[in-house]
Structure formats: C-alpha cells, structure tokens
Length: 245
Ligand code: SF4
Image (tube, rainbow, N blue to C red; front, top):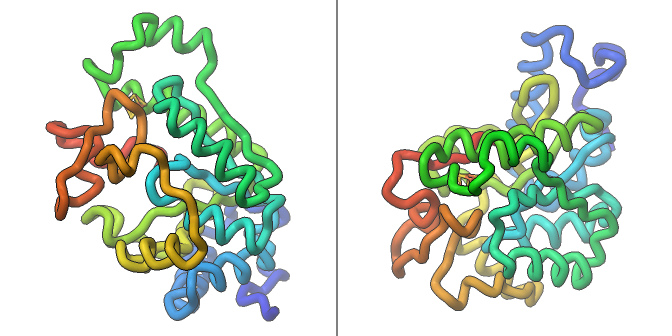
C-alpha cells in the first residue's frame, strides 16, 4: 500500500519537529480517509509508519464492541488499554473479559491510577461528587498519559455525531507529540447498530437496564428513549468530556 507521507521527511521518532509540515500531512491523510470505511481506515493506518507503534484505547462501554471487532479483524495483537478508574461498573469489567475472549484480542491491558495518588487526592473516594474535573484528571487523564508513554499513536472510538465538540474532529489528529486516529468518526447510531447486528456482537450488560453511554458508575445515568446517549454522562453538569481527548 502506498504511504501518503514521504518517509524521508519524517523525524526519526514520532516526536514532531516540523509542526506545520506535519499538520499538512495529517490533514491530507485525514481527507483521504473521509471516503474509506472504518475498517479500511484502520487497515491502512496500521501499515503507515506513523501508526506502527499504536495502542487502542477503549472504555468497553456501550458501543465499544464495534471498534474492538474491527481491531480483531485487522490486528488482534494490538494493545488495547482499558482505564480502570476504580469507579467502573462491575459489568464493564465482565464485559471486557467477555469481549476479549470472544474477539480474540491478544493484549488487553487494564491501566489504573496509582494507589498513593488516590490515597493523597481522593482518600474517601468522593472526589467525583465535589470536583469531577480533578477526579477525571486523577483517575483517567494522568493514567492514560502514563499508559501511552511507550506509544507513538493511539486509536479510539469517538464519533462525530456524539457531541458538538466531537463534530469538529478530524479522522487523524495530532495529540501533543502523538497521533490520534478516529476511524469511527463518520459512523452514525444506525451504522453502529447495523454493525453490531451484522457481526452478532454481544451488548454491554447495562444496555438492557437503560444505560446507553457507560463510564464510571458515579457519573453515568440511564437515558430515555430518543435522548442523546451522551446526556447520561455527568448528568446535571456542564461537563461532556473526561479530558483524555
Ligand atoms: Fe471520576 Fe466520574 Fe471522571 Fe470517573 S467519570 S474519573 S468517577 S469524575
């Protein structure tokens, strides 16, 4: 497969040295991916040098099986990182084990906050109720930053339809000194549902209980029919993202 990016122009590592040139190349790659399916994007990207040291980041939530199934078809050996905040539903851990087995994912890694940091900053485990941004920083953002240190790029399952903020994302983005791939950017609710059906993927056990977007238990609520699934995250707060994106 032809690589879009001229390798002679690449830095020795994925640490960016020429931001403008990289931005142009990222935009070109992103534009080309607009006409490809998510699986085609994934397969193409993983042959590209920018993605030769990638990890998938998954919440193993309501729609996660779709991207994970695609990964299992293209590169089941890819590391898959699950941020175990210490506040996950037990059902999410069960679902992670189920999907890992069912899809044949070879390298699922549970990454967690350090005990000492939890003891210092959230000893009572109630920070989510008083300062959710700090809680997400402690239990998610910092954890992911550490977990991604060995990797030059990462892949996630965000979709443009989910939030106003996500509607603007490119399929390939710069994320600090890494590259981030959003292969499902153009997938709709219907696309997700159709893909689930086509490959008979198992549902997260909380779907049948009325949950549509599933994160940590203190910050996730059930969502009514016809409501945006993301409205069940941090309900009542002006917060739509945990900060890892
Ligand atoms: Fe804390 Fe809630 Fe963020 Fe989870 S989603 S890290 S419990 S604030």
